[in-house]
Length: 412
Image (cartoon, rainbow, N blue to C red; front, side):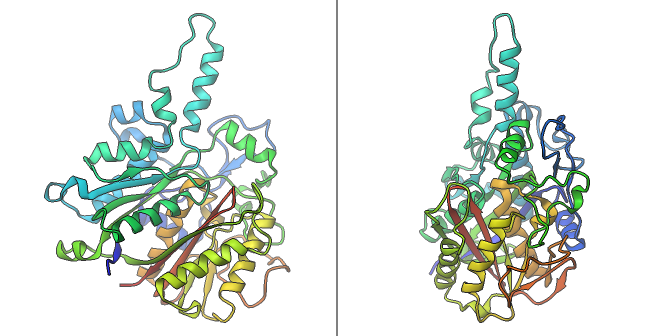
């Protein structure tokens, strides 16, 4: 049976611009939230977000990559470069048609779209769009530019499943390697959604926190006083590789992917099924594919965004899936990073893998008083990281439209 392993990691997040910085701050329980600095948010009920800190594209990318790529693509290139370097692969020694890119995003070139349309409307004489307008807004352009940067000629495309997207990308890459269609993939996701239209649109849905006077305490999954999610931005990248290929070249292996699944709620455009039926089946299918019992899983990084409905639906599903799993530890790391939308699954998968490697589980911060409606018997890692041996770690990502995705990682 073909096995698939993770041999490279890269991250660009509101709490760290590299894997090491991201991991250190997640263990410390650092919040990436603050007042929005990218634009004047005074007109919106939500005026906070988890922005990147001290990231200058000019320090990491070429002039053409910046000129031709929307922010979400620039973030993707940065994280993918770190992951590829981390993998130690010598691109001169592999067939480029054996190395693919499956890269996700939820919104694509949102910032480019807004700016170009606004500039067009303001032009009084001979209005025109930038020649790179269309390429920059396309959701598949990050995957294309990653392949061009590194000369990767294998399978290349972008799945879109809202906030489940980068988990979907990971699952697709995993399956293609299992099917023998490729030896390696760069996979993950990126998002640059802190824009007026995006913030304004989610605020209109009443999905976002309005705790503007205390941003670092705003993202609080499971807390009884949670009032919505905090938007984040950035990218997460993983190099997946066929196990024998990785072993032959002496690669460092972080973990093995042993299961992955997707389901649909078929319930509502924006709300999860209240009983978590789709999420439950998604986790069960993943366990079944891996051939492991619920009680074997040590850590679950939940999707939990800090919304009233979403957190409870997922924990209801978790309670059904792991009803006899007393050793399961649960944390919601969006409490620190905010919600990276299409990149969320990738950065959280990275934390699940790092938990396996370091025997530490990052916390859910800002838990002051648990919601009384949370099912009993669940062990939530609250406010402080937990030292614990982790052999199996699961990561969930769910999205508008009823998309559910789960990936399971195993210690090697």
